Image: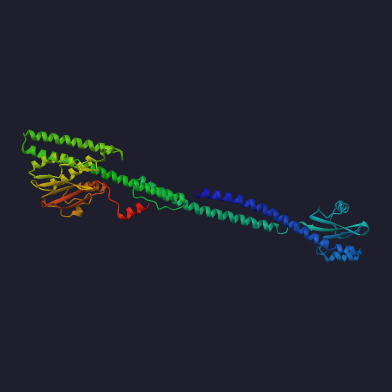
Length: 447
């Protein structure tokens, strides 16, 4: 690219330089010729007063010697009688033509040009003043001016090429950085970025690439997190299956245990099908039917499953506030997964026989699900709320899944101490938009 830009700059600048160098050179040559001829005319005019005063050859010869052209033997005086004084150079035919026309003219002569000026004397006779201008006088300074113009044109071309090369260097470097960053991302380095440099178009391309790379990294991170969240849903049916298998080991012939195990396997299969469907569903196609659900109905349905496990493990439990509808703006499947995750934490992280309580609270602008247990509690609440961190040997995703669901509605997730003495997780889902502040309301009123 640098070579191409240099060649283009050279061609364009050369054409521009020639477009003014050639006319200036020709004009300078014409001016040098006119200057020499004008000087010859002045010297010829200086003899006119002498011719009007005297015709004495001696006086006229002295007058010729006083003129620079005459002193240099480049001037002659042709009298009416045909006598010539000085150093004639004009051909006879051109001299006769000048006498006939009576006008000043220039004619070619060997090695230069001759100026012929007729002078009218008394009695209608004509004398002709001849001034010879050699060729070097006609082109004096022309070669020097052509050299100067050529140097100026060359300097313009060099400056143009240097500026084009500097621009090309900026463009090439910016392009190379962009190519390096693109190659890095293509090779798997999602942290590769480019600092926008160069022309405005390349800076815009660099900024667009950085935005694309950020978006790509975000999508991949979101995909990994979504995969982890979907996989986390398998923990609930796996937990149920493990409990039933433990029960079968203790009571091999119990038909109820066999039926529960079959139900657990069916739930596991259903959960896997749901995960596959969710993983293959394009983004933004959840559908209008998944816009909201009844939190109380979801909680009652999930407790019907967990109550069987609680009975097997000797856990006392209580459900409060789920008698009436509690609409929330989240899909039933996602809310059910969160309820399973939080109840599953109780079953996994507390000993058998530990009681738990689930309360559903319906407020004016929000709805809350409060999960409390009588277990040992949470030693470090902030650490437990960090994604992927668990102090009890689990994945550490359950609380983060619940937190993100709450925050998607404008709500929050809180952790503290339950009235039963153990841990309490509060999931608050916002059911109405936040009221505008007074300042915002005043601005809206003024608008």
